[in-house]
Image (cartoon, rainbow, N blue to C red):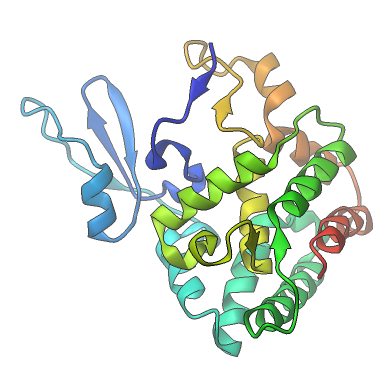
Length: 243
């Protein structure tokens, strides 16, 4: 059976779940490193007979949620926009494309985002993001596809994490370029779906993972191609997102 993500903490990007690993009964739960107000909404009470000892985990800087939110909150300034775009580029673009390409991608994203925030560039529709993800999956020979309903639901989820991460309440079915790249990253992580196509009752079923995990499918493609091919792959996304 397919597993439906029941809450924000289930659906938000797993690499954002970099906060605390705590023992809850027989299962491990991961609590997000988010402001206390959000954490209070999501964290479930622990069983009294098993008080946990939280253990911090190491997270690459580009996956630090607090850092991402701080950059997003400052993204309406030139310096803030550059920092936010750089972090998003490091999250989305394969390092196989090379540092120079990642920097160039970030620079183009920052400029497009600032123009869109000033009303000098059109916003990006949810249908365009859907097209960009489906095109990316097709290029790496993945059967995975998404639709605009998934994109919109994901925007609502990001807004629940922090209003700085999503303009869904102000821009309806359109979003900023920076938001579009974050959404592309999220779609890859969640296989373009609100459901997990692999049964949670079968730990790491390799055939299922190899067939339905977008990240697993994307990784060998990027690793087996030179930097120039990687650059073309991510340029195709940038072209569809109009930056």
